[in-house]
Image (cartoon, helix red, strand yellow):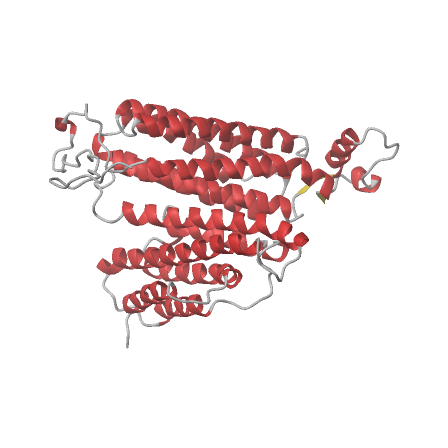
Length: 443
């Protein structure tokens, strides 16, 4: 009988083979993704010896986003909820599930290998979905089966899904590189930094799923605005410390400043709709405050050997910002975001001063009920939420210039920790023409 590890190896091989499927359907892939991630989470928990007490890890972060996607699938413009699942990803899902059904005879030492196999499977499949959905965004424009109205509705939704899966791919890739053994081992301080990032990612998604209220949206937006400011300061300190090259730091600082302003705008708009006694989860507030604290101390106090892991944590955080902002947009667009009836009435009255009657049921106001936001009120949140999402995506794209193997030329080699390799050298530019070769003639 096969072992769990052998089933995980089979799942990875099937995930790689899925890339060669000629007739991959983007909508089917997206519908299948949450099922695959749930199976991956179950396989991960079988090998995890800590259970619920363990800090949030990369697989937990991917899982909570997949659950957020599945929770609002009924109200999503694209892909439609009803439709076939992808056969190739179903095979991967089946292999992951079988790894939890066979008897667990693997030694504990295989836990790290199991994590690698599961993350590799998630990385490969997210890359596949990202690529196919991106291609679908181009095909929508010329699809003869869609009317002009359908094209205008579907194209933004397909692009949003493509951006989200690109972020998930980056998150899985960052986690694989972090545990590859190439990077120096994490110090306790770097481990705290990365755990703070993961905890914020998980708590933000859970808060949006558990309580779709403007009160949660307001607090989350405020914490994100402050965290992005802390991240901007972190990038500046990291450039001064030689962790990040100055050119990349300057490019990131510009978009981070815009992102902080976008979150602040969403915070201010949602504040007008947040007159409620609904308690906001303390876990969300604590995770946000802890993340800000880690940003304030990580770069300045980091050992040079911690720099690669700090960079990987930074790229993972920027990817998480995309998935969190995507979840915010979906929550707003779904029509399930709720606010106090009195706040909705006041905002609508301000937007339509000529009306001589209340736009909301007076009984709901008197009873202090909460109501789903109607289209006119959601439209006030749509603009800031879109700007937040696009800024997060642009910041993640600009982080492609980050090099986890970078070392400032002014950094002394003697600063390495004893017993570690100080020899992660600064990369040199690759010559465009091999030595001794004759360059091509200019035209």
